[in-house]
Image (tube, rainbow, N blue to C red; front, side, top):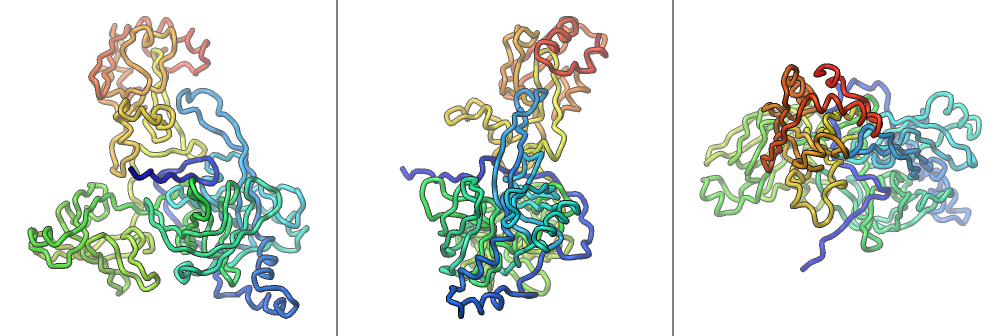
Length: 531
């Protein structure tokens, strides 16, 4: 059996989906400098005549803009949410993209950070505070900024803030030489490794460069430079089982979202919420659709922007038209482009189109050609997804010894070990791309509580109903619990097994204050209401 590939991120945090973005306002000034405005090439051509190689010169001129990121992190307790978060310290890499103090790094470098500091080459060991303006966990990119006071300190040391020019990642070809700058293993001095672009890879919502430059923990968020000293990618991860297989986010993908990150703490990439399969000759013939076929849409959610535009399951997508350019969708769901010799996945085209611009589609439905229009907008995100406690409120309720939370993919590592996925059917909800209603998970049952003594429900199980009311959120839980006022009993029904637990309201109210003191959780306002 072929051994499954395993990947790891350069620092330990995992990332999944972010929440819907706030409305994006127009940004009057650029957050970065395009390489066309100025090239480092003219600056270091003279150095070649002085005996320095081109790479030596450009690296010398680039290193001052590449900083080490040091973070103080808080790790939310997804089992006991009322307890103080654990703390840790991390390190990564970032780089300046503008003289006003904007920097780019990976989202997973800062998504748990309550303090972000940077160390700049040329400023000794001095640390400067940076703020997280916004991040996209989908793309794994974060925008940082130093404030005016820190900016003055840096300018007093360096004269001005150095920055790197952003190039064109679509112009990068296979075997192109490149350099990676960063701080591997948390080392305090900047390091440089060389390699080539081996090609492109595509993963869930992600287009990546495969680079052969050696990278390690701490390189996350560092720039990948081409032979002109322009940033063509951002280091993100490496293969866990071999060397010389690293990955970088193409800089064009980064540039598309930077202005949104200026005003949006958690930015989401557009998501189509559809599933498709290859459109074979036989499938086309059965549906009377023209050959060679397009992408067969096997399932589409009602939350999809294409569903709103009239696309349905069983349709076959043949083309998208935007700005007088036609993108033909082949039977594998890929599109031929002029900037890459290989076809690219459909999501690459969707992500390249600016939001709120009109796109026309062409589908065939049982032999009939149908055209429609849609716009890329903020799509609703799944209720069950990864959440970020530093950027969004995490709610919970402790009642009768049950610690109840809204199910999130953050709960998976706590319950679903290597051999225990079958014990928790809800795991599929956390790993699915399909949007689904929220669920209420029991993260713990406190010893000595009425729920513990009942010995019916267990941590890791899902509550379907309370007092015969379906619950999908903590607010639903509170409303259902409140129905017990004036009643002797309260009922809890498990989602998958149907197990029914019945508790005494009086016993809960009598024991809750003692439990709150023992386990140090805030007493629910429902106790006073039901007493």
